[in-house]
Amino acid sequence: MAEILRQIRKKLRMDETDMTILLEGKQAMGFNYYPPCPQPEQVIGLPPHSDFGVITFLFEVNNVQGLQIKKDGLWIPVKSLPNAFIINIGDTLEILTNGAYRSIEHRVTVNSLKERMSIATFYNPKMDGEIAPAPSLVTPETPAMFKRIGVADYTKGLFKNTKIDGKAHLDAMRIQNEQGRSN
Image (cartoon, rainbow, N blue to C red; front, top):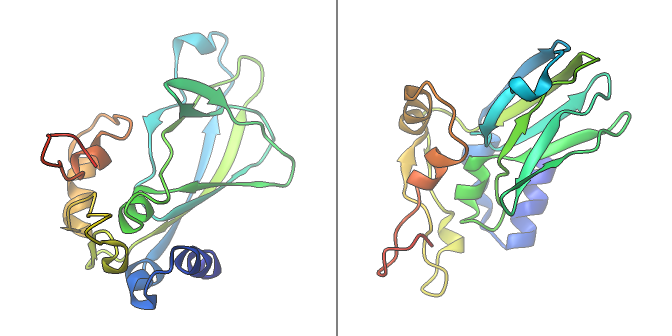
């Protein structure tokens, strides 16, 4: 994970210290099991959301398709590849890169005949830090797109609402420009 972040930092010409909050964070893992459902159109495995953290690595254990990403308002199935990882950019990395790397809204559907299993590894920022656009990426030509907030406060707000709602929490972090539009 550290090497991926180093490459992102180099690509964006960020100061080395801008990634510290991400490199000192914690890793969490989750195992997802979605049983077969005879009426998959009636349920959703996991509602639309974007991942809070830095980066998510997802391994689909049995290669049963179910992950979908939202692109241009449409839900697009992600083709499952044997022995491959799916890598999602999280909201924290979108904020830190000032929108250069975007988190992806996604959801999980269920299959009518087969169970779906996956293992996810989440890399999260350190809880006692702050997240904001990297100072080296904020200029008069590219102003900050997101507010500065403590990671603990950000996660409290994220989990305060019991309903997962796409990218609404990240959108609430956006700074409005003079015309009232989000940057």
